Length: 344
Image (cartoon, rainbow, N blue to C red; front, side, top):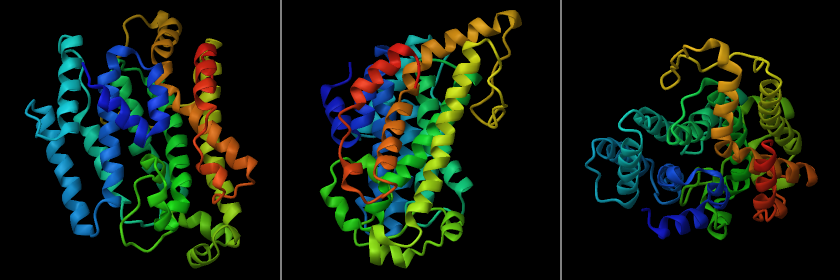
């Protein structure tokens, strides 16, 4: 039984993930809490250290913690103990037939570390890769905890995760540009994990997008929301996130019509994405529907992501608008109705 304090921890530092826990099967709650608590520990590293060397040591600390947790000998660190408990619970629930991927946890650490110093993304594609290696990976791990290994669902989760990751970077942009504002922001996950004490602000927008829209970092740091081209740059990045949600919705529609999802899964064959071909080829349509039904709660971050994109459009892509930093009271209701209708 997972202690109630973990639910409070998630609610304090990652409100949307706490809200969406309601749509995860109860048997997977311990794994979900472990996965997202682990992610929060990584997100908070840049905000708790003052040097790059100290940050590197913390990331290595978590690599060692993952290794020990998977070995069944967790270090005396609360999240590590929680992770070890979740791994043992999954092993017991599935008689040892299903496991969480250790390499996905390590990939999450490496992706967080790569951009923790505030370096910009070279391109929009690099930002997408970061989102895949962080937010999509969180969804893959949650799917493993059900347990479910489905190329179809992983494919949809990839697009949902990329949209969520891109939005997380946009949400954190004002806090990374002006780090002093972070101390007034309660929800750690919204910063994206790029803050660093005493560090000069940076603009975490893809360089190719900044070049196309004429945005200069010094203008953003000097003029904030009035910087030339900033709204155009935010619009372009937000559009890419929206495109991923649109793609995921189209995939859902195609599956419900008994059609193919429409395009190949670009990550098929990569580590963690090897799938056993079913013997019953004729039952493919029903199998995909069943898999989607089991996994739909894991895809609920799509609702939170769409709500934020809608607010961004409402504020005319002013990324510094205070309205974007308020907790969205609509999320529980929107998510509930989306889950009931099995749509997002």
